[in-house]
Amino acid sequence: MFIDQAEIQVRSGKGGDGVVHFRREKYVPRGGPDGGDGGKGGDVILEVKPTLNTLATFRHQSRYQAPDGAKGAKSNRTGRSGEDLVIFVPPGTVVLDAGTNETLGDLVQAGQRLIIAKGGRGGRGNARFVNSVNQVPRLAERGEPAQEIQLRLELKLIADIGIIGVPNAGKSTLLAAVTKAKPKIAPYPFTTLEPNLGVANLDEDTSLVLADIPGLIEGAHQGAGLGLEFLRHIQRTRVLIHLLDGMADDPVLDFAQINSEMALFDPELSRKPQIVAINKVDQPEVIERLPKIEAELKRRLKGQHSPDPMTISALAGTNVRQLLYKAAQLLTETPAVVEMTEMPVYRVESDPKEFSITQTSDGWRITGVAIERAAKMTYWENMQSIRRFQRILKTLGIDEALRKAGVENGDTVYISDFELEWQD
Image 1: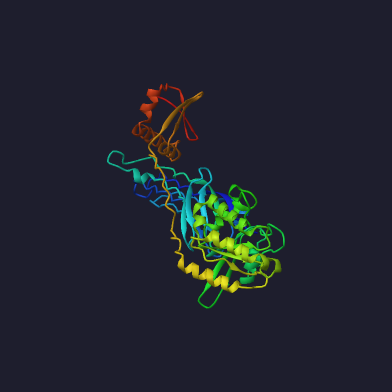
Image 2: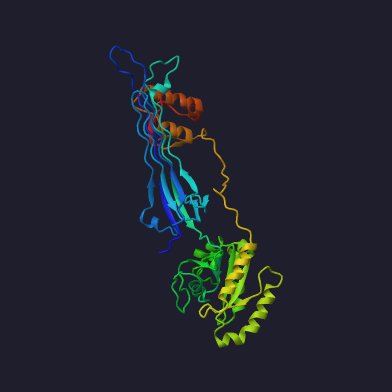
């Protein structure tokens, strides 16, 4: 089954905790501190795997977590780092933050990688806190917290040529005729409920990747029919074969309607080069109407870069090979889309040292990246670690800000998941 949208939750590994430890050796009654650092947590990485073509894997698993870093050890031994978690996705996957709808990356090339959640750094052991004033530090850090994010993955097919048209125009029949693809084919609208890919080998040097895009109807850009789900697949293609149903009441009106829907969804789609092909010319009634249809199409195409309309029969194979060669020629004349290893995304970087103080009914709530991280990395059962946290409060200016806000002795102060009591 073709799946082109999925939501997953990913979490990187937490950093390993640093440890407090002192050398204990025979004849060395006062060994120095030798507590090691914790290991780094594993990153979560998305990687393009060319053999994948759907997001179906994520129907069965939606939560992913990288391993945590290991705790430090005595003798200055650093804990083992957590292994990176690599999640494979098909080429053409767009990665978005499900909460903000911000685009985080556009993965198109085989082997392309995107680090989506960085593992926390390991906490420092007490050997790292030795200085001229404190030769026997009894403090260490816990590992840095993990990063967690809800992602929305959207798949945009990567094909050279997209076959577009109204429902029942013969797109699937054409794809089946020129490739080994086996799409579902029946004489009623919306037979194709999902995009199909096929490869057509014209000769030893020429092959084309074609995508049969499900039929578009009026209002597709607003979600009518199957349009909104599949319009984005056309964005990846470089050349379009616009297939018209010669048996339709008004093929020229269908042509105008499809182009209008594409332009409303994305103006760039209407600028893609198109080859217009009138299908079902094996039918006598189509032959009778053909001069009028061609004349009206040529009038509409006047001044555009699209070639003159062609006539084909996907079922009988009439002019199908000529259509593909014309598409291949147009493809060589169309510049390839510049592929990027990672989509550049502008983000307003906030100062991690910034904080805010809010008075609540039961105390005070402090929020901020740096202070919340420091709270999670503090050993609250260790007095030296608590004093270090107090110095961080002072350095960031939080203690002074609390006094100005009116904090009093005995008030409860909340930082992340921690509940503290204020004592001036």
